[in-house]
Image 1 (tube, rainbow, N blue to C red):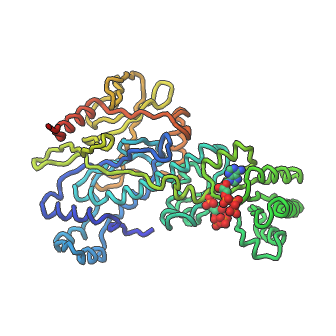
Image 2 (image 1 turned 135 degrees about the vertical axis):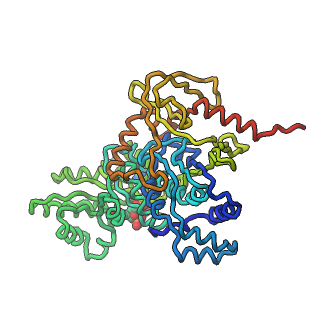
Image 3 (image 1 turned 30 degrees about the vertical axis):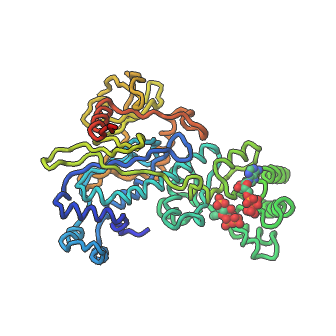
Length: 483
Ligand SMILES: Nc1ncnc2c1ncn2[C@@H]1O[C@H](COP(=O)(O)OP(=O)(O)OP(=O)(O)O)[C@@H](O)[C@H]1O
Ligand SMILES: O=P(O)(O)OC[C@H]1O[C@H](OP(=O)(O)OP(=O)(O)O)[C@H](O)[C@@H]1O
Ligand SMILES: O=C(O)c1cccnc1
């Protein structure tokens, strides 16, 4: 949560900045693009998140006197004039990005940074750090929402998160992905996320009896009572005691909100508890469940007919435990030559999937006449189609002979300007607006792309110009072996 984040970077960025500075190349213009290569959790899409933190980071990017002192003590012996320049540094580049909540796909530019090589290099580490984590958690949350679209989802992960930043920004990402509230009060305060809380076993343990504990809690919070019923014996004591408390509240004209189950067979216990509550005339009392839940257990519990209205999800969500990192990368796609021209660059790999796509690029979401997304289309900024609505050729980059033409479509520009020459031009939307955008984005996609297991692969198409330029650069860089 530290605000001064200039040193929140890998040492090699500072070293490259320094080497460019000594070499006299530090002011060369460069274009970098951030993207990931593989969707997490086997999902059909990811949910873009992290932009708000990135915007704050870039806007406040300054080296303090203290940072400079620290740098001056490094074994690299950075020249004092270089450090002096760092003290004056602020970001003057241009950034385009996907909007938070957007559905995003492998190999498409998500964030594009244009600036001097020195400034564009510096921001790599932090941008990837923020984007990779928050996108991962928003995607996990969206997956959980997918299996419980009409239930209430509570984010309970703070105690298991990888430290404080992950808890707070993870709570925000979960809210973007479809969660309804968080237990983290700081996240609530910082981002205006609704907060919710029940009570812990310790509350019950700290009283002489469960009934006493329930009544005392209900007395203090008559309008917000959700009682944890599994401290001793869920069906023999917890639920009956909660019913007594609810009845006492009813006598005062109040309604208990819910009970929470946190262990045992959640399907069986919730069905039994529902029956006991209904038989007592308490059909309005909701059932909350928690205990190491994720999208798979929730789906399974629903299949078993669990009578659960609200799901509290912690560890599995906040740590994205089945895939704890997203492999987003940041690659140089264009660099200014000594004569001032912008030259596309490529990163070759023996793994064809890892070969980067050269040149500064834009992304359009192509919406067909039925209002659904057909494909994402990547082209150079100077290309007229799809901006002018001209016929588009969509072809498979691995098998270019497989192609089709689209004539009637809408092309939604996905990368929006965030910073232009160092000035923030993008107004960060309210978080509820981000959630709304995420829902609208999901409506653009057929369910086939959204299903949790073996989803359809959404198409990503390169324009012919982008594809040809990539093939040319590959041919220039790969010399066939002759044996
Ligand atoms: N009916 C069910 N079907 C599938 N999974 C369930 C069902 N009921 C509970 N679970 C899940 O099974 C796991 C049970 O974990 P565990 O054995 O640690 O819990 P427990 O012994 O009931 O409770 P605790 O150890 O917290 O007191 C949890 O992930 C829980 O969400
Ligand atoms: O299970 P999660 O999805 O991470 O949700 C958060 C958990 O945190 C609390 O218990 P805690 O873990 O402190 O203790 P417990 O496991 O003994 O209930 C709560 O009762 C949940 O079980
Ligand atoms: O409010 C709750 O019930 C809660 C909050 C955090 C973790 N576990 C439960």
